Image (cartoon, rainbow, N blue to C red; front, side, top):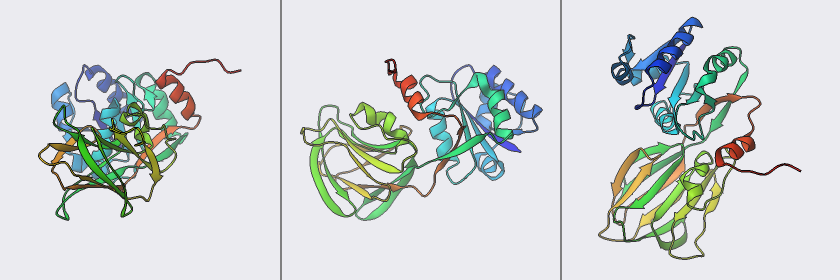
Length: 285
């Protein structure tokens, strides 16, 4: 068995990575590391290109925070192999496991005691004059935001070719259920269970109290057109890929054809995770 090992790009993680490699090799699993990781951490291991890792990996292991997992999701988008996420960051909403339990979780994976949960993603296409000029996908969300700090932008919203509304705001967030506990919740959007397949459209600081977030079908196609002229606007995919686009351009968002396959514990409880990560208090009656 071969495991692609994706490591957070910053921080003192060399000792952790070397321990992980040692555990994997002791269990007959060959770790595949990116060239950047090997060179940065000065690890005495062979490095591989992402394309080679895609062709060989039976498993993807992510060491870092949610951002590292979002990167891995994009790099291995066309693979249906399970992904194991071990948190080395702060909150780690998507990261399932603590790194201290690495060997225990690997044993559970080998013994087929984990289950694979499918997480939907969204794809965002930028259209200029009807032409597709850029396309990328996101596990959490795609955000339209303005470049000018003190000026709102005007957006026209179409869903499944039907005009819905037009409003002024700081932008809009198109989120998956996985991303509903990220930027979306900060913008007043709903928490949507990660097992559901749906798309959440949330305005960012709209200049009207009647403009509210809406939860859409997984089959919906959302077109957002920039109506404001002479202002910089950007589409940001999972906070990592940023693409500028202009007045009159359209961001078209729909469900991606690729899902993330996250390996999780059988006794995983979504509501316990919400309580722990969001700091919900209270004592049950």
